Length: 239
Image 1 (cartoon, rainbow, N blue to C red):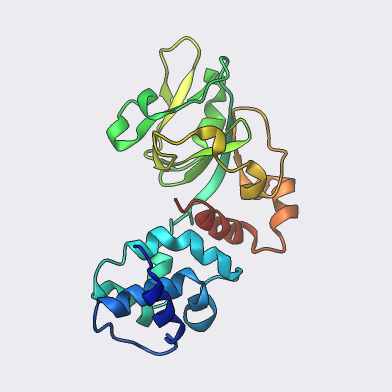
Image 2 (cartoon, rainbow, N blue to C red):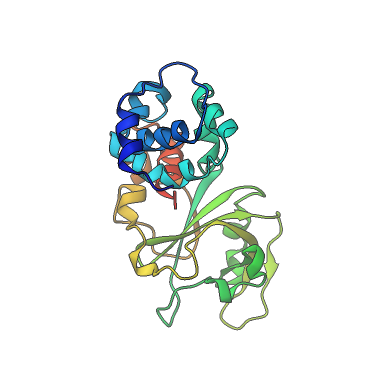
């Protein structure tokens, strides 16, 4: 959505504090301008305890409001925008990954079913079975590589599979619910400190439950603990 000067000027005269019906395209464009300058965070939505500049990150979501019906729903139902954010309520696990060759793992062309973003998440040794078994079907795991969060994956079943590849012993079947676009330079992904509020994560390839790690308890105890972290992460991964 391109916001012209006329729409910007019109948006300054609008106060979306009550239920508003969009009458024409001008109203809708003004709504977009008003969203971009951040006013609705404080005046109407009350969804995020963030500075107004956070609203700029929601530009792709505003652009998805392609009909007056959707735009009206956004005004009358504050949970509408929440529903557009990624649901990370099952994000419970962390796995730090490092390939021997130093390259990025699990890119689109490495996946077993790339069009569905489904792939085998590997563990090196067969005696890692107990660790690999811990995440349950439906749980989400944050994958970290080279101090960057590269994937959020959903565990698709409760089975630990044997791997016939020489380098890997076992794997879980997962689906990437978030990862960068193929054309994106992964070196420009956010640093782990922006996501986890720490620069020090367990280096091994095991999975770790966030709530069982001392650094996580310390860093997030005053910010909503696991739920607060999940909400923070959901905002962080808006593309």
